[in-house]
Image 1 (tube, rainbow, N blue to C red):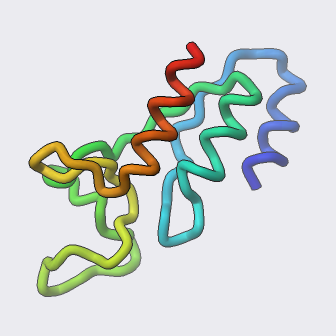
Image 2 (cartoon, rainbow, N blue to C red; image 1 turned 120 degrees about the horizontal axis):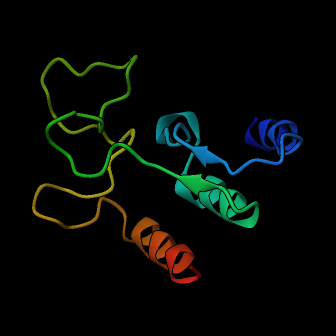
Image 3 (tube, rainbow, N blue to C red; image 1 turned 180 degrees about the vertical axis):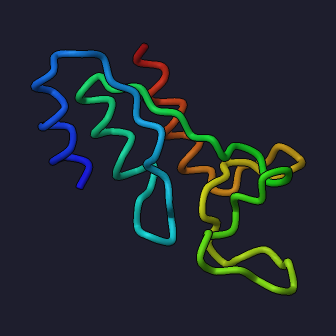
Length: 100
């Protein structure tokens, strides 16, 4: 999906920023999306960063009545104490940002 949209938008010859790309439970992950965006010089914003205020660890369509942490987070990158949800994702984000 992302590749097709990127190709369509490239025809406008304008800078691009992707604001909707992260949904682990829908198999949209940092590891599959960010390298593709970087390769095409497209900025990316992830609006779920730290678990807490916006509750974006939960998928929109999969509420957990008990409020317990889901097995797989939907968005967020860090726990409230600052530790990564997944270290490999943090390492990838750092690596891709070091290139700039």
